[in-house]
Amino acid sequence: MPLSLAGLEAHPGRYLGPMLVSLTLEAIQAGIIINQSLTFWERAERERNIVRLLVSLVTIVAFFQTSLRFYAAWRVFVIDFGDWIASVLFIWADKMQSTTTVLMATPVQGFLIWRCWTLFNRNYMVLVTLATLLLAQLVASIVVTVQTFQVHFGVVPQAEVEAGPLPKVPISPTFVLSLTCSAVLDMLVTGILLTFLARSKQSVTSSRFRRILKRLTVLIWEAALPPCICAILTVLTYLTLVDKNYWDLTFQAILGKLYVISLFVTLNGRADLQDGPVPGFSTNRISDFVPWSLSTPIRVDVRTFPTPLPPR
Image (cartoon, rainbow, N blue to C red; front, side, top):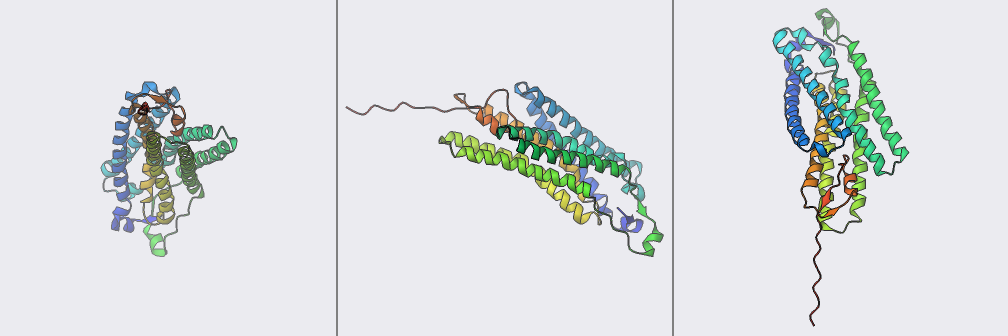
């Protein structure tokens, strides 16, 4: 981003503020992930190996990203304290943002795609459509990272500032593509799961079973909505604020961990559904509603009462 030293000193909140806010939000997210992770691993023996491997992978990447953010903040506020130019220079830890985000998002979205595929009786049109969006997002994010490492971020000399207006920052179509694919993919996957649940409710007559489906619907909304909204806000703030400040970087910073939290919300919420009712009635189809199937089905208690004999 082309900016002048005078502008930086006059408006430090536009450039240093986003880093502090991002660091605070990521620290809160890390705390949520730790809490959710402990809950998950208490009941991890019932999960499939692929799910445990997936959780381990995204958790490691999430904490690696957090460590990069703390390192970047330490450099700005401790090592280079008072150096305005150094405070806006993006180092390698900052330039890896797109890659760490996609490393957290892609595994979660990939597993969701597989579940949607099985719900639609292994319809290859669904698989190809969703997988294409996922692949485009992955490739675009890697390209953005490579391009970022080739760009020098600095302060425009005062002579150029006095000579005329600062040049505008060109919008990166590749970066917009990566975020747009992520948002569209989230909306499609969420829509598929909610549509499947809505159709299933039409053939359910038990009120207890309907309550279970309602809880599953709320669970899907809680898991899918935050990362989808954040991806949309990231695109909008990038398109509108890239020439004005660094606040668009805040949404980029928290996006990846929202996918990790989404994963834990789904897994732990699904486990609570299994542990809640008293065993009595079992169905494998309910496990299909939730994107992360257990090795054992969710059980729902359905009691029947004998019909009294008519008086004689």
